[in-house]
Amino acid sequence: MTSSPVSGRTRHVNRHRSGQDNPRGTSGDGGVRGQIRRLRAEGGTYRSIAAAAGLAPATVHDIASGRRAPAPATSMSIAAVTTASLRRARVDAGGTRLRLRALHVMGHGSARIARALGVREMTVRAIVRGDVPTVSTSLRDQAAGLYDAWWDKRAPERDRFERAAATAARHRAIRGNWCAGAGLDDDQLDIPGYKPTAQWKPATGTGTAPDIKPPTHRNRSRANPRHPDKRAAVQNPAPEPGATQGRHSWP
Figure 1 (cartoon, one colour):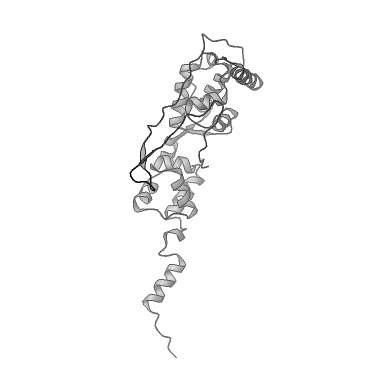
Figure 2 (tube, one colour):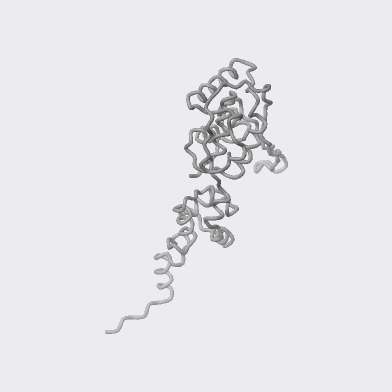
C-alpha cells in the first residue's frame, strides 16, 4: 500500500510547529538569540550588548527570552556586535571606583553622588564596594567629570541631614581605608589593575562643593486620548533629597 502525499498545508503546519518558520522558536547558534547567548558567554550584559547595537536593553532582553521577534534591522544591529565592540561600550570600573571612593573621603555619600550623576544610589554603592567589574563609557566619563569638580571640595553640611550624610560617608571611607584624591595618580587611574599606595588620611579640602544636578529632559505635551482637544503635560520632577530613581536594570 502506498502512502498518500502530504499536502502543502500540512507541511506548512508541521514546519511552523517545529519552529522552522517561527523567529521566536529559533534557538540555533546562527540566530539572533544564539548571537546574544554567545556575547553573554563572553562577558557581555544585556545593557552592554544594547549599547553596542544602539538598542534599548529591554529590547535585547525580550529577544533573548523569546518574548519579541526581532525586526530585520534589529537582527542586523545585533549580528554586527563583536566582543571588541563590547569592550568599547564597557570599560574597567577600577578608575571610577577609586574616584567615587575618594569623594567619600570628602563626605560625598552614595546618595549625593547618585543625584549628581543621575543614576540610582544602589549603582553607586555597587561600584564603590567593588561588586561591578565594568561600567559604561558614559558613566565613566560622568564620574570623571564629577570627580574633577569635587575631589578637593567638602560636601555641604547646611542642615543636620547633610551633616549626618557627610559623616556617614567619611566613616565608610575610614572603614575601607580609602585614600583621597591627592593620593591618586591621575595618569594611572584608568589603567586596569591600578592600586594606589596611599591610605586613608583626613582631608579638609579647599572649600565646599557646589550642588550638581544632571541635565533634565524638556517636558513634552501629548494629546489626552479621552479629550483630544486638551493637552496633558508630562512632568518629570527632580528627585527628592535622598530618594533614588526607579529604573529597570538588566543584568
